[in-house]
Length: 382
Image (cartoon, rainbow, N blue to C red; front, top):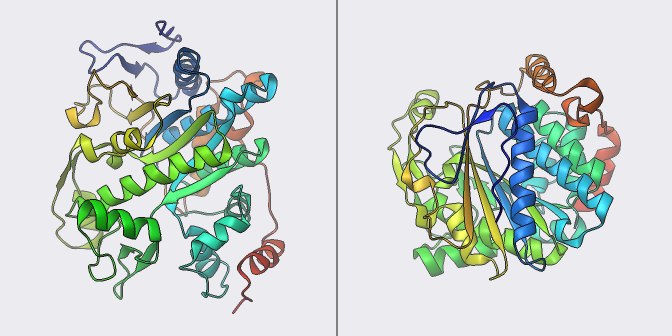
């Protein structure tokens, strides 16, 4: 594969940890970051078998607009290129690290609809094959727990280009104390947990977030890998663009901030590369397929654990480390400040070239969405 041309505004670290290790000189320069990832994606796509599928896995901090918008930027550029060329090897698909039963759960908790189908997500997925009802439902409510305006930008991009989107994480349920557990009614999760981890999800509560125990995280990685590969086959995708938390890339996971937030002690865990999401995805894909594993890091001098990097002799995975992205984070309730920050990131583009996702514009009527969800779920509001 030819050497990737590094855009202006990006440099190489003194001691790179892998072939594609880069530093963003200006943390607000989203244009340079977008150009780099697009070039690596296109160079990799051209170098591989045209009949194979390229999986681009972008690790993110869920509250960081710079990470989420990097994903939105790649989706937008690949979709535009596909629309211009109609090249089947560029046909886009988006997969998200969200629970398989997210839509019925969201309908229950946000739209106050019935609960009959909350643990039967397979039927819902069949009724929403492109994932656009899910996408519109979130946009109509216009809020999420983490970085809601940035997530809106990503969802708007998906809808604007009419790209299929699939939720691939394990289904979840809540225990009596409100802790998320992997739901045993999710057949794929139940099967993988039993076969590979000797876990009976019906009898053993397995923490969804893997707090203090990596097993829950490993089961989720396995399930997401299988579901992503299945989705690529179903939608005949040429380029799959996946969003996933950086914690799923392996390495030492610390829960100091969460421990303080919850007021409980949570043990740190070590997730080996072998059970990281990119490694397990490599086991689920076909011989002609390839993976770009993008690890986003805020600090330009941060030490990257070996367990985040694919071995140099791995024929399927190309690791990309992108350092120096803007370290600003937002949660629900900080919408105006987040929107101002997104606008600042967008200024790295000339006004005439600025992508539409820097100013989310798609609107959905929440009242009309209730009727759509009632029809989809077959349950009236309560």
